[in-house]
Length: 336
Length: 159
Figure: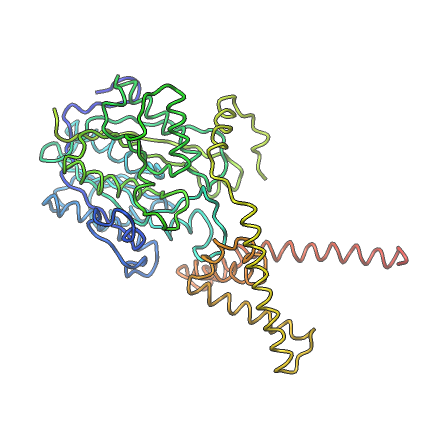
């Protein structure tokens, strides 16, 4: 089970039997619109507040996953999830609606893989037969939380990123048809002393590199074992910096196999500056686009490294640096 | 205040920050300045036109026309903010749309819209001046300091 210090190898190979992904209007105009199960044309989702809309996003993603997996909510034993809003109310309130036993997770934008790693662990040890895990974010709700009012005219620097409005959920089981979760490496907090909250990619890149290297070392693998190593939301800056760091440390990673979810979801010309971010970013891209491609047989093994910046608006105003984390989960489908 | 400078960075952190700095997309400062100059100038030009309008068509003097002019500009900024245009203009114009009075109006109105869902008293009322509050505070304070200096110089300096 435990390989090295912080990698779990799942010998029962938990299966992702189905997923649900929901997006907002901005995502509907993006590159991956066809990979969403449900797209909304309105940022409010017919709710009175953005926070309620955020909650509905997560509810719908969970319901879609259960519907596609052919399960009723009573059959799902646990729900693991989280978001970025104060005290995680959107996810907690959504869990209240679903009525599933629930554990709230906070890993900022790394929540998706934190949940998948823990979920796979629980299923692997027969702690659950069916388990839901997911993450979500809502652009306007998160901007309100972390930055200025949405309509405030502040010029964003080219390093800043666009928070995804979306939710992704995956239904895990110990048997069934679908991609397998084979291993997970838990990240540690890496703080390189950066303080600019409008350059998250630059702050998070070392955490991603640390986790990727730990994963390869502890599983004794070469990067070429994976067809795709995909980071969560490093954006343009973080992607380049992390690639530089990996090369500098002598990890033989190829540029073609190293991608970033934050650079996939939107198309050229959308005003997203350095790319996408938010817990919903890696959740929707991995559970939607990447697993769809995997099922089509485009690739067999991927390592998802979701990165998160563990800051708060308060810690940033008090001049604290930005601690970051990354969790890696390997997903395999087909092949041996 | 930031205590970042006081914190000792380890050599690894320093090395990484140098590497990161090289890769970081830079703000196009010169281009931003030019855009700010022209958009800021355009807003002032519109303001000037409104002022002339009030002087020629209503009985305002150059002094008294400034009040309705400012009011009109803020009203336009309010509409643009409400329709979601002002923040897009600001992404292009930067300081050009932030420095004129319209930017101040935008700061107040955007905060009011943002916190509408939290109710009128605790939401709108409590948060409306979240951004503009410090502008008002330090504006009034610096006016007080300057006025004090002026008073001292006139009273005791014999100017």
